[in-house]
Length: 393
Image (cartoon, rainbow, N blue to C red):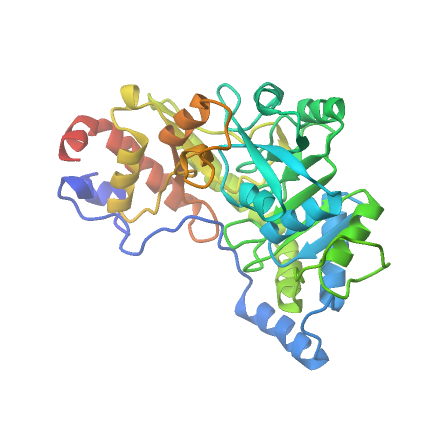
């Protein structure tokens, strides 16, 4: 890597050498050492128990429940399957309100479960749904509210809990980004779904879990998870294949061992971005919303193109030319996609503004705090050369 002082900060799009010869990726991408992973896999092979709620899966559920402070955790093959199972376990039928500013998996899981998504806008000045925007989208057929918690932060769960109670529907939390974070209030929803994708702080390749304090709901989830169920048999409407393999469980246990060090690493990188970008006109590093404690697994900046001189898509192009795999965290709101274009009752302008103005930066195991600082310096340099870059772009 060529340092800022060595390059004199001549950007690649203006004829300079790219800062990073090997692209700096997005996502947490944390993985244990080969020695630890090999030992875990060797134990699985020696036992000859590879899936079907094996001993490591049982242990992973216990440790995850302890970490989350809940009564029950049901591990699943991935978070989307977990959300589909949750819809069935809750007996949802009708429509459910979900933010349009979210990755598509939450709304697609609703569709797979026979539930119609009703898309709502985001709160003023933020990226989460709030009681006002959810209420505006509620129709007479509403059966649930789905709150998506983004980037180590949270929606207004206290307000949404009150609204869900008023409407007598469950509040479902899609917390794919939020493992290792803690909400500043007490609300938990009927259940909470977490993802263990490689982009998140707990990485099992694929995988996830559903957490709840309701033992009956957990029993239904365990019986839905596979055709022959697990634990106490209870009636369920349908079964599936959402089993969590022993290899996934082994990775989950190793990731839990490393969780605190991963949080510290993320926080250090986030703080380097914050310090280097402080005071840059037209840029704002998005803080995790309403988090008493955050996993800080994502670094997202809001770009005011009129002040900074470059738009968010232009900044992405500048950084990608330097070998930084920056991207729009949500390329377009769901109501702007073919599948969900009829799922909103009206215009959702706040979400559209957010999608057009946000850039996600690398943060995680694949870079160091010094690399985060170097990327921030590239952004500062881009702002200084904004007029020239804009003309070149």
